Length: 263
Image 1 (cartoon, rainbow, N blue to C red):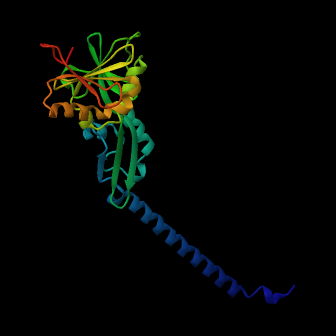
Image 2: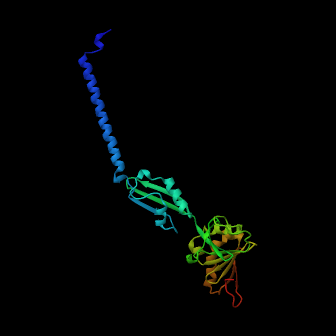
Image 3: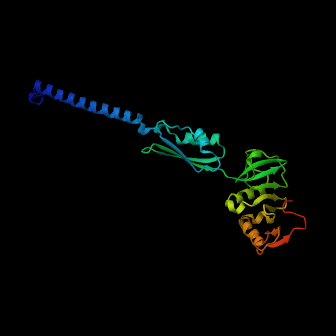
């Protein structure tokens, strides 16, 4: 055995001392790093300081914030986008989608709301129902809510209206889909819409005019209703029937004496 490779006892002790010293330094550094991380995670810098909401059109922000499982003061690391979205949609059925954005530097949580669109009010056997863009019956329309959307009156409802289910009338469903694509100004003067079993759609305007369309040309003609009615108004025609079932120029027929548009 070569004794030169072993070193003296003094050298061995010195090496052991240096290794212990290095290890202790590493442990001290790790301790302070962990302590720093813990302090940072528990500091106000990683707390939710502000919650904002956008995209909601008919649901109060306060209701959405109440439904969201996120509060001011909670750790940003505890913010769970999936849980927030699920809770809001459970408590507010009119919400279609929730996108959650967390900004750690600002301490903010933003909720971007996408709502299901209410487009019309269904009248059936003396009861009014709110209709969504896909023709689904969303809820019963209460008396105090007013009538800010057209009232739809179908003539051939064969099955009972059920909340949460599509209207059992394909013509009404198609009408709802088309209404959802229009701007508010394009439908604001339409107070009532009747749909008969033959597919004729009669629009009753708040200025007394009546406009006839067909289910087949709804998508093409419904956006032009206001323009057509305005043309006859500008010519000082009294309220009458505007036939838009075909291509322009549209025909106009005055009502019989004493008759008004709503019938």
